[in-house]
Image 1: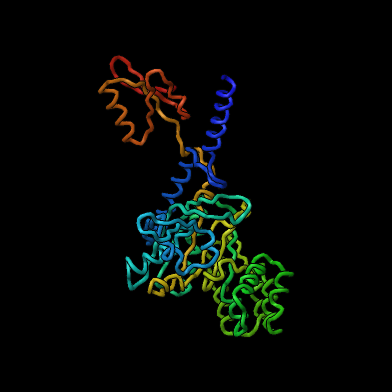
Image 2: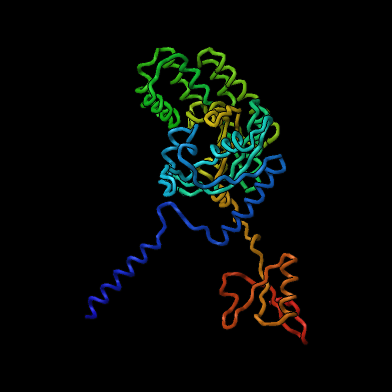
Length: 403
């Protein structure tokens, strides 16, 4: 009888070990990093608040039709979907907070003037866009609604750069592009949706062979313009080349002028910043309506922050207001700088039912110190903290001394 019981125990042990595994690309945030993330969250929200951005906390889950209103196909594929057991309606776990901010601006605040909103909360992705990373992000973002001028674009880009600098990002490069360029190059040419999606992906991946295939039915001049976009990336000289090789159109000239305006002011305000252009990057093409940007830092393979102008995001909520913003993953950002000073050595104290001891501990904690009790039969060191002082009873008085 022992063998079957042993076998059953082994099977149960294997089940339990598997049961505690988290889903792929989902991870716990342990104490040291959690403290780093929380400290950074507070600083970033304060930075935004000092610029007039108001904090909002949208729900993690919404009706699917509201959550995906005005967004592109890419966001729909990233959204976890489930059925509400109360109403029977489809719900979604948000994969991006921007549509929720637009809903708040349009329906709950309903202001006539400029509204600046910021947020920081979890978002969940059904798919992993890259080979590494997490599907659960702590998304920090900021949005400006109600102003269509470039001044708002510049304010958003500078806020993104400032919060990245606060997090310790070094050697930053801001990469600028514009979703209007492809639309203006295509002009009146008829392109079905699947072909347009293939074209956008080929441009973003710099896939010349695929772009040749999906543009072969376009008029010759239009096709040359689309293929020219593929080679337009690099420094400021890109804008001059773009004016020379792209079709002559008012929308193209306006887009290039706006990129030049932003680049000049970013360079003046941030002398160490590298400004580059990628006119072929059409990421979020069905979402962005104008200038888009991504910020990279030395030692980071992927962009730390992305954003741009998406003036159509509020249209489905009945208020088609200009909108521009950016977002980033706070958990990924916190990894840039491991700040050991955040968790200072604590003070250990013996546990005792003593009013004077409790009063001394309370005063220390109110002064900002961390005091950890030694429970009876348990050493405080086992809690994973380091200690440089302790409370001891000397002649009936509780005093602190170095350990």
